[in-house]
Length: 379
Image 1 (cartoon, one colour):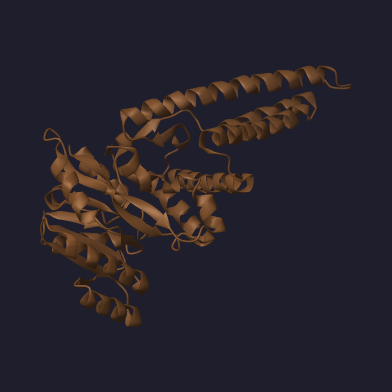
Image 2 (cartoon, one colour):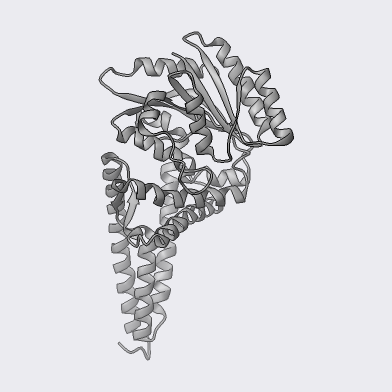
């Protein structure tokens, strides 16, 4: 099995050198076919020269590309001479046995499955900084461990993932006409692979170690929240079948409840309802923290709160982009990929909604009773 390894990069000469060194050792021990490494780079000046030198040192092909990661990946696909392609980000290094595990995963897939690709496992390494401790409890990093959790996938990330070249050519490769230089295109392409009738399997022993350094700052987090939240809307515009009706999220219920509380306060000339609903909102979030802690081990409450704020940023940009595109049903719809996900989402959301409504009725009733005993309130 012959592999073309495609690595898009820009101004990461030190990380590229580290990656190419790990790949060089890995390729020497791979005995089931030929390999090539294609570096698609848009660096200039000294960075470009350093990456060129690393390519010569570690037997990689250098190709100059544009700033667009999507165009770089497509250029890599067009330039690849082998039938199996592996996409690897430039800020990782590979674990020994990566190529052997990809080859065996392809060969051991059940014959009745029409396999289009294989997803490997990404493990993060590096200092556990303040920001990483927050990110680690957000959904932002979940997909990197999908290969360990699930045997097949509706979509994948763009690092440490392999596809058959003819499948990528069949579906039209990466969509280049998307906003932002990167983000969301890996999800959109891999979904088109499964939409075309292929399955994407797992190779949990094909491992890359991803540096935390490129995630460990506030601006990078904001940028990802903005890009990914906005790209969800773009992807659902391209594939409207992914946009399913969902039970409204907590913040929608909280906002509606506070509006009701405000109206009731105005009518009754009492702040009791609004105060009661604010206490209710805080109590619900405390209960969620306890439930999450029981399920996933308790986290530092400050990290937990900030992780929810980051998730809220994602939702803010999703809603903002939807409204800009006049998709006003954004509060009632979400991106869901398959029947298992839909069933699990509905089951969990139904329980959540039931508890929210029951607790809302209780707090509202208690507030109403308290108003009855408040001197001078007009009922």
